[in-house]
Image (cartoon, rainbow, N blue to C red; front, top):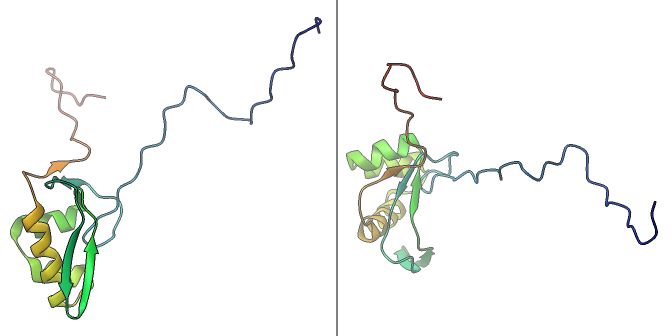
Length: 125
């Protein structure tokens, strides 16, 4: 090795500096099932408080994420069924869903838009 040269630092086997970073998997904010497939935008991003029985619950601000099953329940306004799916007593679920509805801003968007067919009629890749 020439004078003044340094030994290259070893890299772990299989490490690729050009590999794309792994996508963060979102969890459903309604039932905790993963992965979420829909995002509901909300106003602000501030903390919200919900009184559930004698307890004051702090609900983090920011968008809410839904799995496909909870998305369908939210869209249909089936809050009691959503509470059952989330394993929440109806009173707790009702308070959380009211907070969600009050903070919601806009239409839900899919996290991974479906692929569209190309002009020749085949699926795009």
